[in-house]
Length: 107
Image 1 (cartoon, rainbow, N blue to C red):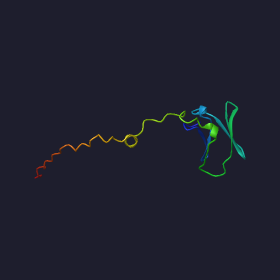
Image 2: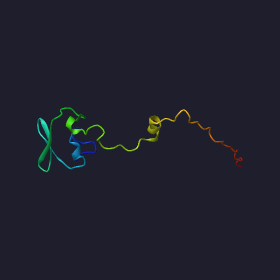
Image 3: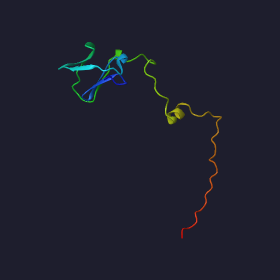
Image 4: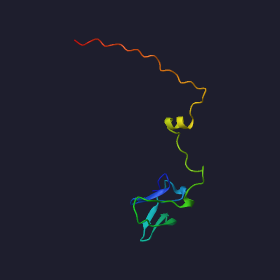
């Protein structure tokens, strides 16, 4: 299965697939020197086989053009605050008044 980033995992490595195939179930053929990725008996891509572990191979043509990739969700509120800090006219409000009452001693 092509993951949501456009990769197929084989052992501990990830091999890129064109973005059009994200979410599709594909066949992966592992050969001595290469990895072949197919959909419905049609070869989509061939990668040189990685000899190391925990690597990722990305072919340039598998990346969507800038700004055309999947949309990210809204940023986290902390990230939003960094991206859009309050302006100089915004005042920092003082904390609201807090009152404390001592509890009666237990008998």
